[in-house]
Image (cartoon, rainbow, N blue to C red; front, side, top):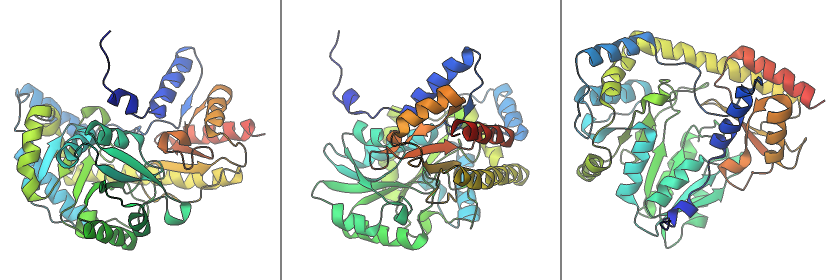
Length: 385
């Protein structure tokens, strides 16, 4: 057998996927499993988007696009960022990618040299670490407390920036917490990184899913950030594999050169269909669905507290709740295992998101219908006695 590359040992496992596999096996055996695990909306693309896809397919528009993507789609994304999030972006700074994963791949490959250290909060989405590793970098998780909304702070940058540190990778709203970083805290963090000539990759894939004040993009604070976003979450197109990267103008030739070899282009038919996502009547569909997610969040939060599952930071975005199970267990992985096999509820243990809070926390996804969430809370009530 050929020797495997060392990076295969360095990649972090993705326990949410393993949990999904176990839940699928139980479902195949006839068990009724309520999934609060995978972060995939239960909504799918609106009919208008599917109709556009069909028209594009019938018109034979399935050939390669340019590596940067369809000009009409890049224009639409730029207008969306201006109207929804207050950021004026030239379309030439946008590259359409194969999901946010494709955007992260291009961003990390463009910025990270072997041995470069990149700071991330603990907890954070585990796959992001693996993109840093794939580029030859070293992800470094910094424990972030509930008091700082589980985000990196300016003080963290001052304390943990070392000789090998090159930049930070952060997300707002965050997976697994659903919590945003305050504008003041983000401004202070950006200033500290810029003083050290570092880069900032900002994950905004949940920016459209907000439940309190309408957010502004981090680009309104610093126009030279590298921002990734996706059609998977707010636009409910997970399997369409479509996202985008926004980068400073002087980086675009290098990024397009990478894209031409690593991806050629994002899926063509998905690009044509996605142009319809930004039509006013389709945006209204997404906004109605956003309010449905808010309704689910508002149902779950008090129910969890009644059951002794404390939520130290109320999520104001995404569709996740990061809940403390320490009143019931000192091992969230064992607790998750019992929940699946004894209560028929799939929930991701904290180990997936970093060691700092691994033992005490579970991530619950409310990307499932309200009736199923109500049933899940009843099962939890019985399970906890």
